[in-house]
Length: 215
Image (cartoon, rainbow, N blue to C red; front, side, top):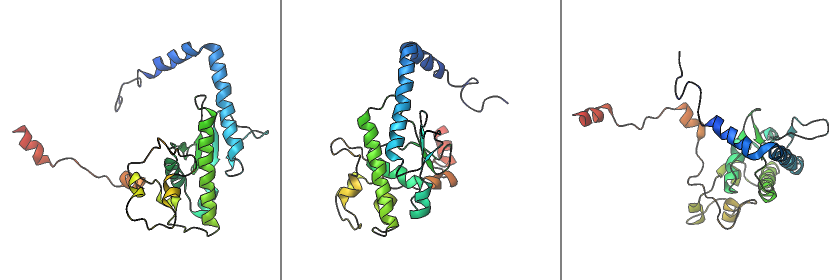
């Protein structure tokens, strides 16, 4: 049985891109990039270790080029899932790190060498704010279901019209880590990701439409 799709040997563009990157960086550049990537991952781990357990650290408490944030304790204590955290990060204009891999219910953060310290701090500020919101649920300060985490992401339309939620629009749309200017806005509110995976929905025209087109 041959390939189901694409080319027999994978995408032909992958190897030339990697080859060009290695040539352009050179030995010294690759070494420096590796050092910065490892430093960035350890910086994030150090800033967030009090809020989220860090998995697979060395005997000295260090990580390699990535750090795995364990969000499962929040799910157990406040029913705040890794999906809730990922969607709340959108309100801060942050793309969620790799979810539930290699460990289910975790976030694997790989900052690489390309992120400046300001961006690392912006991500950490957002994650610490999320941890504080989860703690408010645990402490009973906010509703367990109607809160910024469960309703995230918030859209620009949430800034206008009626507002009946027990938290402010400012908290909803401008959490720590978000930019007051040039903020990313999600085009939609919460979507049930799993529903589309489990329920095949065909939006194609009916077969007779194709028959009429052929005629």
